[in-house]
Amino acid sequence: GQQVMQIPQYQHVQEGEDFTTYCNSSTTLSNIQWYKQRPGGHPVFLIQLVKSGEVKKQKRLTFQFGEAKKNSSLHITATQTTDVGTYFCAGLGQAGTALIFGKGTTLSVSS
Amino acid sequence: DVKVTQSSRYLVKRTGEKVFLECVQDMDHENMFWYRQDPGLGLRLIYFSYDVKMKEKGDIPEGYSVSREKKERFSLILESASTNQTSMYLCASSLSAPGALHFGNGTRLTVT
Image (cartoon, rainbow over all chains, first blue to last red; front, side, top):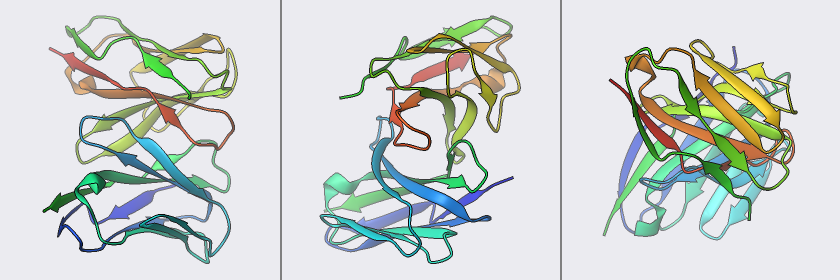
């Protein structure tokens, strides 16, 4: 079945450093979504990408969808302590009916 | 803002008990989902529903069933709770499929 792999599992950075998490699918995706879960909280929707090669920005966050629609990335520029949490990608396969989540990347930031 | 409410934040049940986890959303969303979240495993889809009285199995439906009698309510049922069902259960809803998921605060279930 469809699988969505996410790396790295954990990442620790110093405040001000950049951070990137990668998401790879075994099959072509019709769309991909990104969520953030703060410690003790629930996942919160960040963005959805649909088009091949699409790039979207939200302040310091940059989201990309690969040309082949099999991979995606989330890049955070100059991390802040408020960026701490787990970032999940979730993809929908071409024939899929529900989102499949990656296992997430947990980001910790020290000041 | 969409509000997804899960009836319990914490729940402790005994092995073999029948357990009901309730979820209500207030935004007239068609689609509702149940996920479980375990450390290192991320979110795994148990069941989902795109319409009242309609249900579809997700990736890990064994040991679970669901009920959707009304559009706003989606219940997860553990027919006979087992210790390996100890987990965080997250309910979500979305306006469209696939659309942004709005999650509830979760129910942390412990089966002893």
